[in-house]
Length: 416
Image (cartoon, rainbow, N blue to C red; front, side, top):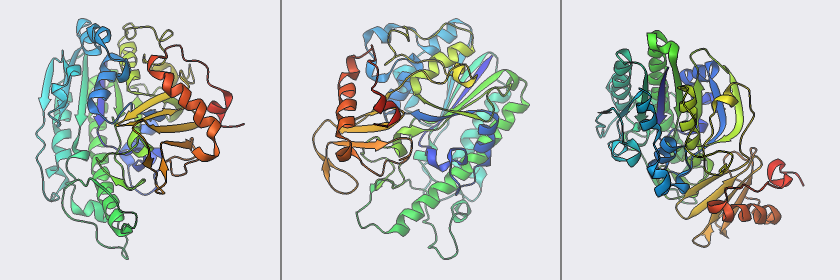
């Protein structure tokens, strides 16, 4: 048995066809979803890569990390003890330096060249260089293995050929912007919509290039002998804001969906759960017990029954249709903001004091209905104060709450 975890940083969940986008052509991702199992409501714990990897490797929520959890064997160490070597291929040099990377059998760094302009061909892009290394590694991989393939170029350089972004510009629209620099800015209230459109076209071109590269890696895995024994997990640790709340890229903001709602697709070699999907609330800490179960090893350290708020659960029973969901809430942290998500609501609270919402009104709590308000554009906090109070109480208790008091029906269904 083997695992490939393809971790694509800064991939916006709303830009993939399999997650509802009808504007960008993503046949590679769409086919992967058709042959695999898709999680509709995967959420980051925070936009910090250190938190993502700490949770992924330990199976424990990042906010619950302490000396005790640090002393426990990590996913990488437990796999090594079972004879499974873990390798990291990364174009982000910071990943290998994280404490969660300890115990890796091999680290392959793919230099990320800071391009200033778009490439002439796809083969000359940072994406193509990265995936070429990953594909070459798979061609000679020694089984059993666990590959963590971290691709960070969506947040580092937009160097896909200019023609890729031109595909998404109509004849009567301004030409897309040139250059490979990744924008990071907060738009003015009276921003030029053509500026935002150009940025979205450039990102769309980059996603199209990524889609081609992902399809090539999947094809290699299907052709390789190890492919019949390899679980493929494709996910992103955080999204990329594209102006939904006037933020573009890596700028301070609440943990709105464009940042915290992430894609997660699990592809089984025998196509278990093919074309199926789940609305279950899942987070990075669920990956460790998932991979351990795949390799036939005991679950993550700690008891998920005793600590449902912080301990991850295997995703495999959901993908196999044996279970619908295993939690009714998730927490997200982002700077001064803390958030709680249930099947029916998403509450963000600013712990540092009042800030401004998208309408410029002073607030310290924002409430959105789920899943209808996908991008959290309609704040209903002033109309649902009872829901704000109930969710705030659970959010305040969360750091020390491992008992998970049942949620009121209104927090689950959204109905009075």
